[in-house]
Figure 1 (cartoon, rainbow, N blue to C red):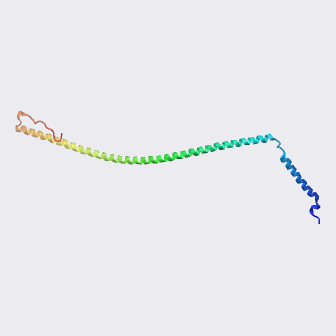
Figure 2 (figure 1 turned 135 degrees about the vertical axis):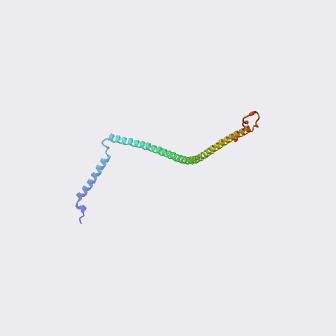
Figure 3 (figure 1 turned 120 degrees about the horizontal axis):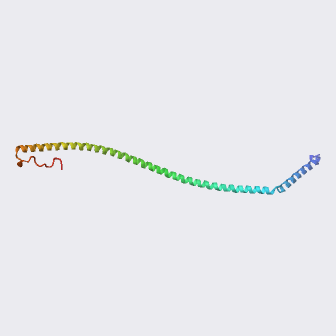
Amino acid sequence: MNTPRAANPFGTFVKFSGLAAIAAFAVLGCGRPPADQSASQDRARALERRCVQLEQDYRTVAQARDKARHELGESQTLLANQVKDLGDLRRRLAGALADTELTRKALVQRTLERDNVRVELASRMSERELLTARCDKLRKGLASLLQDDGSIPGGASAPAAGPALGSE
């Protein structure tokens, strides 16, 4: 019986020789130093510098973020305090407006009372003037009766004027 291997010994040799050639090229290609050593070193240094710069930028941004968070917290606290103060001021304003309304009502009431007292005072003053006039008329009438009667010695025309009624 013929086996397929024995029939084609040349095919096996080609396979092994191809495999050996590929392995040799791989060892030679990987083992060779790069053609331009300084260019790859420069590129590596540039990448390292860029990496360092990016790390510094990251730290700077992280610090700015932390500072912004801190300022935001302070701003929120300040805002909360101002909102509280605004509420207090609104309550005080409402109280002041209520006090103002009470004062206005009291002013209106006092104004009405003042006007009523003025009217009453005018009425009393006119009554006083009327009574003063009547007293003067009565005094003159009494003086004329006493003169006619002749009982006033010395010829005095009128008695001495005493205090008027209603005056003190």
